Image 1 (cartoon, rainbow, N blue to C red):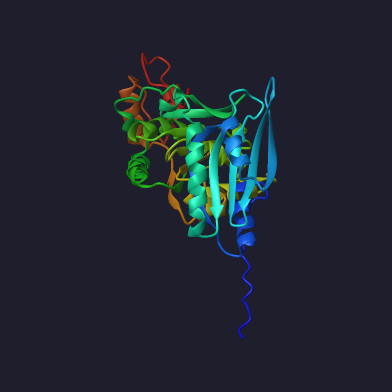
Image 2: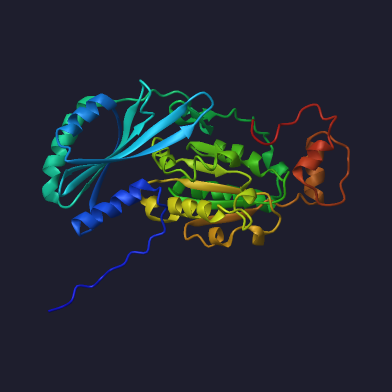
Length: 359
């Protein structure tokens, strides 16, 4: 008689990552890898609870409290046992609000024999499906903020691009960005690293990338990383937007050995583009580092299996500096390499030039 082989799974996950924990919990209960059905529709809270209560054998909930200026936002993440072979997990967003609703419903089940009951439940839930209003979602360039309803997006006013934008960048840098744009049009997931000294136009380039792609871009400043990249609920938030591009700025302040949470941030990013979560979330992440040496970037990010490119934003050489200065109406002659921001600052008398950075 053959002895049963003991298989140990070594998976790098956070204890707070409830979706993965539910999956592993059901794996243990079923004695086999569970099947999964994810429903991204939203449902009215009362109607959903009425249906699920008909089948509820056991329920466990986790509570997330997000402090805000005038109130606390409370989200629930629950998993319900429907039968020995079926579990359902879901999020209740801002449960104390009258506008609270159910989002991201996941059925974990053992075999195809369980589909009949799951179909029965989903058919009943269909009566309580709600359509969320569209508004700022139509904007391509956005940032995130915390409201009474949890994480939301806020449009960023796009800066009008100069018709000769290629003059604002080193030739090799601009070629690399155009190559990146072509890749992003075809790629549903992956990591890109932009680096260079401050003032070389890295953040401004996001306007150009956004202009060339028909995808939502969500810009996340480093003071919002804790409630986004490090929050399991962020994954739920992202699934409302098809194939977004996430931009993380000033990464050198977070992704370094001196910062105690650096490894957590790195692991969470890799999980979204290269780990178990990458199959359920299709997104591209662009990280921006204000460093002049690639060796100053966390080596774990550089070794990511889904790394698309590492692009250095170089200074404009002498010829490029003079071409840009002439384009801006300056008579100043440059003899050395220069940062983009310095050339613009040296042209205070220029009647009109486009802003750099993000509004």
